[in-house]
Image (cartoon, rainbow, N blue to C red):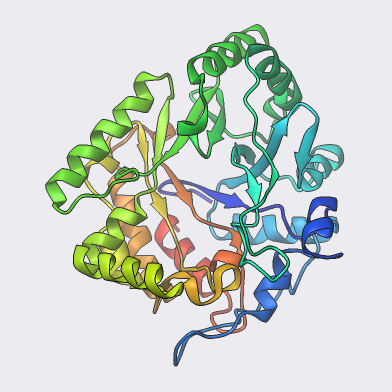
Length: 381
């Protein structure tokens, strides 16, 4: 299928039991545990969100991974960006799906990996009586050049796989939290050197950047100026591109700064505050002129609802529909239209983040609606 843009979907490889989840959350725990028990927070709230065609799948089954790839390909998605959890040389989590994809050489569908470089803690899911305080289960470590060399050699077979996604001939490597890496320049230098020694012109480094950082401001002009500064900062550090992930800015512009402050105060005083924003208004405020820059790759999001993970403290975008998603996706496609064909990249958040209510897979309410909406927008057919 010929497409107007290169849509790369983030893929959560979490839907199978692993030792760390068994230990801290109970035997057999997966994302589905929270998804199935989610409850609506207001009248008309679609919870729990229940999968349709694929069911409550288990990623240990290769048939599931093949069917996911087929669905994505038919919708015009170029490939999956599998989250890769590497905490140090000896510690991995959720690596089974990508290991099996490499071992079996299927599905025959493009992919890349994104380093999910953050701690694992009970902050991810709603606290229980057993874990009422913040606890770090796995600590993300940065151990310098020798470990970066080991990391590169670990993922080199993926880079060399003919399914791996390339940009300008370079394997695309995505970094979730670039601000947490104390020696980014060392990492980039080591990897680019090793890539050239192995026949590549380098590695194509992309990082996620929230344009308003940790201190959002009131005026739209200031948002834009701050976003541009932050994007350029990472390009100057050696990244090839940034993925603009500016939903906090969009929420403030959509709902108003005062409304945001009131919600924060309510949460602080009561311990509970649902952060509910209108999906269409958020998406209408998401994209800016900076997304048109050659080195900025925008984001599209079909829906968002963290109720399964956070309960009454969830952040959610209400009233999303395939039609509203199509409108947002079409805007993103138009934004990248004038870029070099290699750089017409849009990141889709996400393929299967059911615990965050950000997914494209069929459910019992919308069926294939979001997949069909994307295909209609992205395809030349």
